[in-house]
Amino acid sequence: MPVDDVVEKGEREHRPSPIDVHVGTRVRLRRTLLGMSQEKLGEALGLTFQQVQKYERGVNRIGASRLFDLARVLDVPIGFFFDDMPDAMGGNGALRARLGGFAEHQEGFEDDTLHKRETLELVRAYYRITEPAVRKRVFDLIKSLAPTE
Image (cartoon, rainbow, N blue to C red; front, side, top):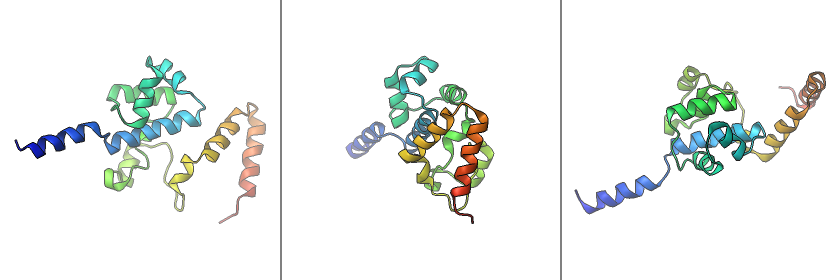
């Protein structure tokens, strides 16, 4: 085996897979939307918060049984972790439909919106409203303020 191949293989082993990074990003997104700390998620899974950090950065690959546990704890279908995967990484509409993702794709919806701090804070605040009737009125108010198509 040529030396170049060995170096290239060694370099690849230290770089996270783009798919692992994507799945980790989706774990972080859902955890944050729920207002859950890395420590709290780790406790629910029997892990340290450092291990959760490694999963979220894609440094450590998440195995099938752990992904199943994450879906249960974060209350999402397993397909959620693969939603919005770029086509270059093997994502496509048909795959997402088969996996039963968290949210269906919406035309004109900017994917980056879910990753903005403002969005996360708004969703967290919304779910902290304990009275269902008040929460519904807030929801209706926000919808009424948005421009109609």
